[in-house]
Amino acid sequence: MKVSHILVPTDFSGPAREATDYALGLARNFGATVSLFHVIEDPVVYVPALGGYTPQPQDFENFSDAALADWVVAEDAPGVTIHREWKHGHPVASILDYAAEHGCDLIVMGTHGRGSLSHLLIGSVAERIVRKATCPVLTVRPASVEE
Image (cartoon, rainbow, N blue to C red; front, side, top):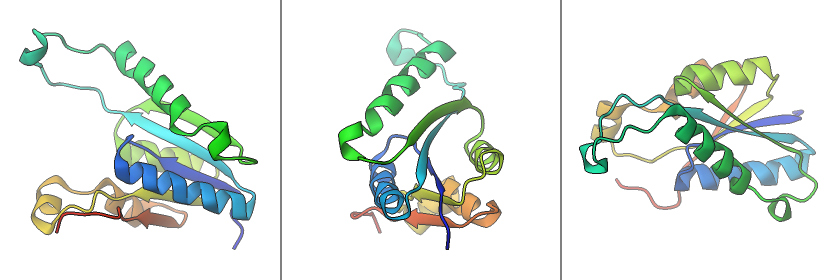
């Protein structure tokens, strides 16, 4: 198995952190490049608690730039080339498009480990990526999950 480009979609959650760490280990073993990718879902929610303030796209973009820059620092990934990118869009479609457009050999992503009722009601980005991706997908289950 040849792995030269690993895609790590991140929502900056604990499970995404675990998946990132796993992917970095794989990248070191295979000599692969890692692409950290975040999808900004445009909000359609009015937040009264914020005094009616609705975050602007630039707010999400600035947050994404900073979070991606801090997600993996050079000392945590010696010898691993890391690309960082965000995009506005739908998570599943954007992740699949990114993997195809950039020739990713493997997608490594975290799962939230939700129980079956929550999964039924909310769905799973990871599950849809597993079903639709044209490259292998490795899901990393968080160490502590709700059952």
